[in-house]
Length: 71
Image 1: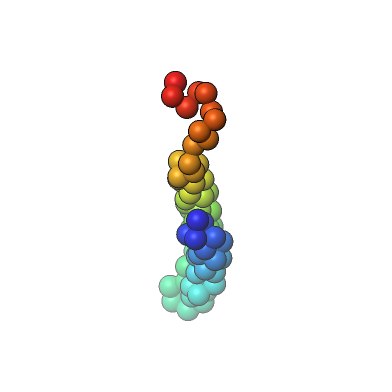
Image 2: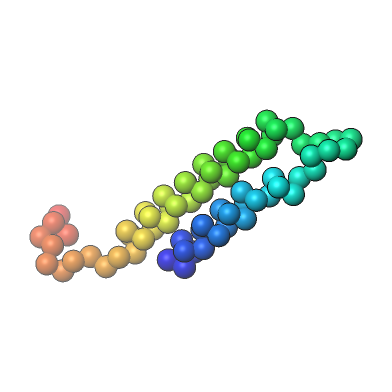
């Protein structure tokens, strides 16, 4: 659960990385590479949050009153 709470901070840090890339000079980073990076980070953050959701549901104790538990 703590890792899930830190995920937005990690996402913000990863989204800020292209701001550090060089924009002028001899070898500037192309805009297409920056957009690909941003969408890749976005997709990875979605997959990680889905993984945290699945893990959180598995980690919850089952209801002892649930009749379908033993089925």
